Image (cartoon, rainbow, N blue to C red; front, side):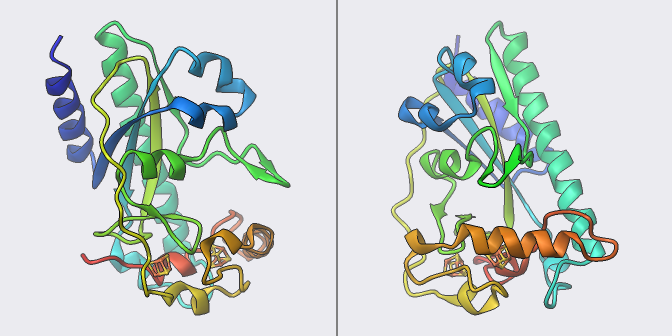
Length: 224
Ligand code: SF4
Ligand code: SF4
């Protein structure tokens, strides 16, 4: 079996469906923090495929001081695309005779403390898509924080990619953009509770009804 060709094919198909970045990593100790629903199954799956779909810069430009309806629709659309790409990758791997689990792009299982099945950001960092930014998101060189993520876990042992050595450097643009004051100069001091409270407040806005914000994402456009 030509694993390099399979990796290239899956990547090209993901890009044709809207992905901007695709990478691979080994799970190793990342499994330790997985939600119990997938922890047992993940013991057999040693590889993660991370996929990022860029948000439209034009949509991000429409945000002023809160999420709006065009951003909400776009956010939902990108999540659908991510889940379709993850479904395609998992189906293709299944067709080859291997196990795979697509992890939903945006499924919060619990709000206090906030948790999902796993951290797409952690996987994406290890798979070389980008780095952990001051706003607690995955930051890529090209799209900044304007990229959303999905992950497929699999037993197919594809060649891993390498984490980047880049970081936010001397950029602090998102700090002032955050209405909750959640972002600090030291990324390890990110205030998750303040962010969650702000996003929860936005969810109560008329016509929003969803836990979204987008302001620190707008502040971080990348090089594109
Ligand atoms: S805006 Fe600058 S400091 Fe904030 S996450 Fe992006 S690169 Fe990092
Ligand atoms: S999502 Fe909103 S509240 Fe949370 S850190 Fe970014 S700007 Fe602040």
